[in-house]
Length: 374
Ligand code: XIL
Image 1 (tube, rainbow, N blue to C red):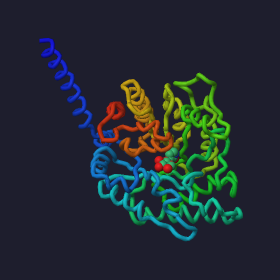
Image 2: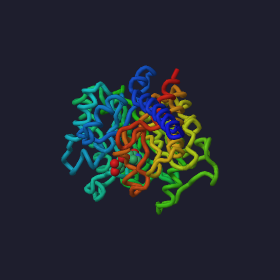
Image 3: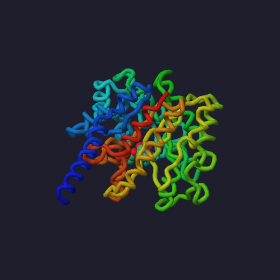
Image 4: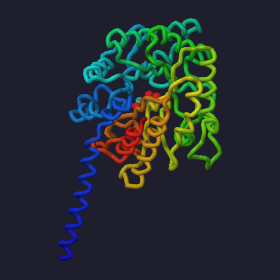
């Protein structure tokens, strides 16, 4: 009898779990995002489309796709006088054929640059000409070949360092502070008036504390122990981003929005409502552009619950502010999260779906927030 009771109990629990899994498997973020007037999606690499399970899942969950790497300098500009859009075009064609839009990412960054670029020693004028040429070529390529597909561009990626000063990327060194305005103006000229131009960066305290452990650069963080509802002004890097963006607006540089990457870390996930509250006041939009929350392998329920709270919290911040209309996760399934690589395999669990494409609690958490958009 005891055994039989136990079996019944197990069957009942399995039944409940089965229902929960079935319910989350039925979730289509895309469907509900569409109803809420939001762009919701994921970053992806063109080659992931070869994975038979991947494309149908992405088509069901996303109405916007970001180029994870395929539009970066190293990918599209392999040598000084050659551009190569084959891989990027594959993802763009797929997104277009599935009725999606895309986020262009990115037109400049200090990483994923081709070696030839980093080895140059141009004059300031040559550097400006090169930056303009690249931006014009890349933006025009997508505009002509896929009209209306790329609706947003990350023009400048991570222009502020962890020390809250200008990051010393090649453009900062070759051109000086003005490179940001030059890049935005070149993008506007090439993209036309209707594409939205973003400054994109990370301001998450948790990530900066993690970076502090490995980075030779000084990291400016808020007081130890401060967490949770930190406002932007309390986080030195966030304050620097705010000052930079405010300066661009004041000088009428053509910027439309701020991308908050939202790579999150730490036990006490950042409060994106507090970090982003300043943007609407400048007449700009903002977006969550690269959300993820890496945890250790094994995924005990408490860690997955924290992950769900972090990702759901970022979604909530966006859903509740009319100035935000875009929420992008940095990947679809854990099979391809960039965290596996950068954590040396220690944190391979970061996204809304596990490596086999099964929904995690974070999917339900994000979905629940989407339904609240008014
Ligand atoms: C990452 C990609 O996910 C990796 O595949 C690549 O090796 C390095 O870049 N901030 C950004 C993204 O703006 O472009 C980065 O993407 C993740 C951090």
